[in-house]
Length: 176
Image (cartoon, rainbow, N blue to C red; front, side):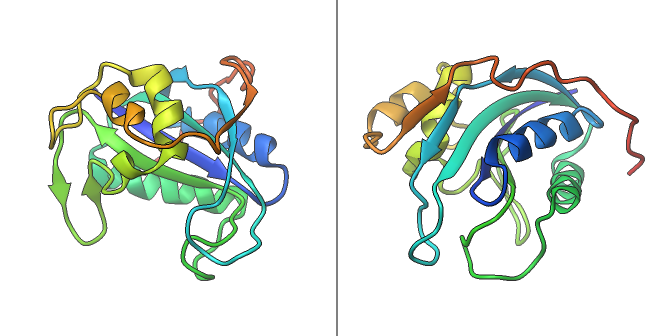
């Protein structure tokens, strides 16, 4: 089993409901270990005038290898209504990214670990630091909390404390 940290975001439709559904669907192939508070954040990049995002992070245990986990996450996004295309970093009902996967460093066309912009984004680091403050970035060796302290988090608004996701019950297991 591997430990992975995921970032979840949504700015279209029922943002909180979409994040809850993603967490529920994750339980098909992952054991949910921790979920951060829920935050509202400004969109980064993409077209002007997008709705605000809801963001959270979670820690999961999984038997999936990194590429298989990525494929599974794309299936989760599709099930919630995300479709390929549209503007880069545009509005979306769900976005689930792998931030960290154990101490793996992967640089491939379809997958980069740790997430290449992890250390630059407050909407990732603030929730991640809640559940992984002492976890070290595999490439730099620096703790997540140290990285969080170096970014401007003034645009991050707390929406709900840990526990906002409610009880997440596994449903039927996906066969990949």
